[in-house]
Amino acid sequence: MAKTYQEINEKIARGEAVIVTAEEVIDIVKERGIKDAAEYVDVVTTATFGPMCSSGAFINFGHSDPPIRMGEIHLNDVEAYGGLAAVDTYLGATQPSGDRGIEYGGAHVIHDLIAGKEVHLVAKSQGTDCYPRKSIDTWVTLDDLNEAYLFNPRNIYQNYNAAINTSSRRLYTYMGILQPNMRNITYSTSGELSPLLNDPLLKTIGMGTKIFIGGAQGYVSWMGTQFNTACTRDEKGYPTAPGATLALIGNMKEMNPKYIRGAVYEKYGTSMFVGVGIPIPILNEEMMTFVSVENKDLYTNIIDYSVQKKSKPSLKKVSYEELRSGSVDINGKIIKTSPMSSLKMAREIAAELNHWIKKGEFYLQEPIISFPMGNSLKGLTINEGGLR
Image (tube, rainbow, N blue to C red; front, side, top):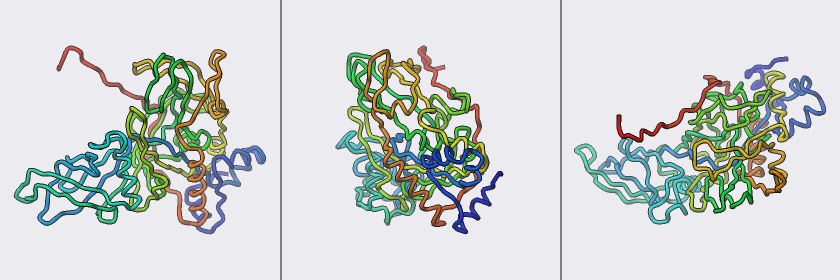
């Protein structure tokens, strides 16, 4: 029997909705079958906690007296974008600091603000008739700001490649350190708990979907950059290569620093770990089939990062069950695997979102716009002959 968002929200309001995590629902389906499970369960919570470099924050500082039109902006010596209105800025998570380099960056500033710490603001301006001040040097906290919200252009990849290194030298990458001669494999996903792997065809996730982000309630604001729904998929519709991504938004003033963390990747740069949870409404048996997927049925490719080209060769197609086992066999060589994301934190987020819904503090939002399937990536063409 099909359900609607309204019917599920009414059950949430009455305290009658059955909400389980994407890991818990697997056993329910095995016990009850798809049909009975779809009637029994109303919402499945999914989550991930991992590095999401394409993240950042819009901030409005408010006007000083006399006012300033900020052109050069630094927060704890991390440069923020000054090409907006007078006291608006965008701070990117991967921007390094001037004095500490990649050991501290935009992600750390964002975390410090959410944690209630003071941040050093230095801004300069050429000065204008309406904005006469030419410089400002002060300290601000999150409470001092008019607005501060995360707007992350590309988060929670639907699937992503695992990484290996066949060369004889160590590689320092956004997938961590890759040891030479295929001595380790890294990957980044919560697998069967991952939001977009539980709704592979984006039946319930679109613009306006309400989510958990950084410990606050936020929303899917648009397709993420590099949104690729034309990626390779298995016969059930699950992607076997990097697929869809989401642009997310949420109020920093409501966030918890536990779920937004700055990270440093040796000899690569700064990133930000973002905690995201998405509830999947069980509208019908099809959605129950999707959310009951297991790690053994989700596959990715082990890609050789030593090849410095856009298209890198795949050494093996592998399930997330194999990756999570701790090792993978490639042509008789047993290679250790390690995750870049935290399954422990993802489980905590899925449970927290579950708790919010059960308490009636979080209701489902039907997407305002559905995202397209069949969207493919474009690449940058380099004109070696000069401008044209």
